Structure formats: structure tokens, C-alpha cells
Length: 395
Image 1 (cartoon, rainbow, N blue to C red):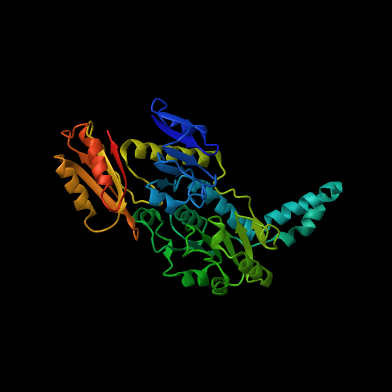
Image 2 (image 1 turned 120 degrees about the vertical axis):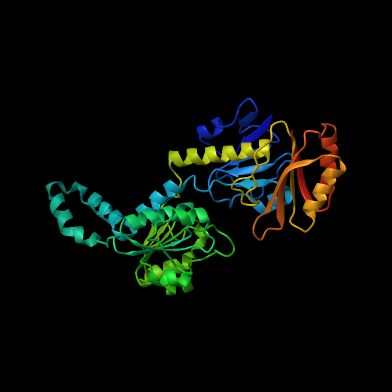
């Protein structure tokens, strides 16, 4: 029986995805095979020797020590796209909030609520204080055209906006999903110069740290409106606050308020609402559960942040060998020859490494001639190969 430990409140539909005849799923299981987590901080956590994978019911994995997991042969999953509708809708809301002073107008109405019959007259007299531009006809720059960015680009175009997208790593699927009137920005300076609104949808890495900073803002239009519902660290807080004070940036909408931005003039700070819908939480939990089960039972990997996609249908009744190893020359040959030395035939095999990664993952389906006593010795011998990180034998 596989053991899955829950480290946060997980939507019940996700928990129900597991076959309870073969899985123990709770917050109290010990020495788990898998962890299912949302926001629990694991950066300094110690993991048991049986832990095979960690699934984040969401996109960001900043709370998980992915590099340390890689070194231990632990797969880290996330759920890209599962919360894309929720985030997309909030970005569309942010576009409106940054344009029309809706929040200021609501606050004013509340402030005169006690004026009785004078309320309509007061509201009418003050309404011009809360005007703002329409979205139609304006230019939106979308940085990152993944599951969320592509949907925002398409819906903004439907609203009558001219949309430019920048993503040097756009997938074929994402590109096919874009409306034909979405224009390509060849680089970020081009997007910065032409956009009335900019929304950011890229992962947080060393290369995207403070992507929006003083130098980037200097290339933008005066009065630009910036939306960041992706990661706090993508924007330099000091630089954005200075740009707001100078009038260079008209509004900044962030889903990650802190001591600097929470009360700053021109900042619309949301309490991390991006994926906070019951539908999103359910979809993320179900997707995470499916990925855990497929890996534990079949060794297949979908949506890992530290390993490539490797998936192969199971052959009924045939044992499967999975090898987590360094991405170096001749590793496949060494693994194959070790299998052959046991007189076992390889029926099917797939191997892949992530772009620029120093680790790879190989899955081999073995012939039914492989005897049960032979498999533990085969696992031992492959594990003993230099540069092999972890080996599993799936019956």
C-alpha cells in the first residue's frame, strides 16, 4: 500500500482520486511515499528514505527544495494550468481596477452613506474624481504565454485590446491556442515601449528576479499600468514605488503585498487571491493526485519541475524498471548492458533529460522472462553503477 501524507487542507475531490484500497492518505501517515502540499514550507524539511515524490497543488514550488530533491531522487510535481481560469479572471479584474478608480469610488460612496437624501447629489457631484480610461483600443503586453498568459492574451483581445506577447520558450500547444491577432514582441524592450498595460506570467528564477526594475520601467510609456499576479520577486518593490511617486507608473496591482507595498500610494494590493476559488483548488488537488498515482504505480512523470516528461503505457504483467541518473554519456548503454547481463530482455524503453539539466530519467519495460528473484539483484546492480541516483522496480 502506498502512503500519501497531506501537509495542507486538500480539496476532498483530490483525496477521493486515490484508490483507497491501495493508498493510505492522511495528514498522519508516517514514512510516506508521497507528499501532497499547497503552501506548507518544506525548504528546511528532512525527508524520509521512502519518499519518492512531492506534488504541489498549484504552480509555484518556491516552498519545496527542488535541487535537494533532485539529488535524492525525489520527483517534484506541480499543476500548471489547473488554476489558469481563476488567475485569468483576477487579471481581467486587475486590468479594470487599474484603469477605473473603482475602489476609490466605492470608498467615497461609503463615506457619504450617512448623508440621507443628499447621497445621490453628492455622488453625482464627485463622480468625475474617479474616471479612468477604457481598455478597448489600448495595448496590453503579456510577459509569458503559458497556460495563464495565453488565456489572458486571448480574452484581452476579445475585449478590443491590442495584445503583444513575449515568451522565448513558448510551447507549440500554447502557440496553437493563441488567437491570430495576438502579436509577437521580439524582445522585452519592444514590449515595454509599446504597452499601456503590462501583466507578468513567468516563473520565478534567478534570471527573472526583479524582471521589472528601474531600468525596465524607464523603457515603458509614461502612465503605464503594471500587474503582477505571478510572483512577488519578479518586481523590485523600491523601484515600482519610486516610479509610482514620480508618475511614471499609474498603478501597480500585486497579489503579494508586503510591508513596503501594502499601503503605498498607487498600489492595489490583493491578499494572494490568484487561485483562491473552490474550482481551482479542486482542479489542482485532482491533478496533483493523478500525477502522484501515475508515478507511484507506473513510474510516469508529467509536469515535474525537476525532471523531464517521461511517460510510457504499461504492458500488463510485465515488470518495469525506472532509473534516475546523471545525464552523462554512455549511461543508457551501461543500464542496458546490466539488464542484458541478467539474461533479461528490454521490451520498451524511454529516456529523457530536461533542457540544460544534469539529470535524466529512464524507464524500461522488461520481458516477462524476468524472474521475481532476479529483479532485486538487478536493482542492486544498477544502483551500484556510478552516477545512478535512484532505482525502482515496479511489478
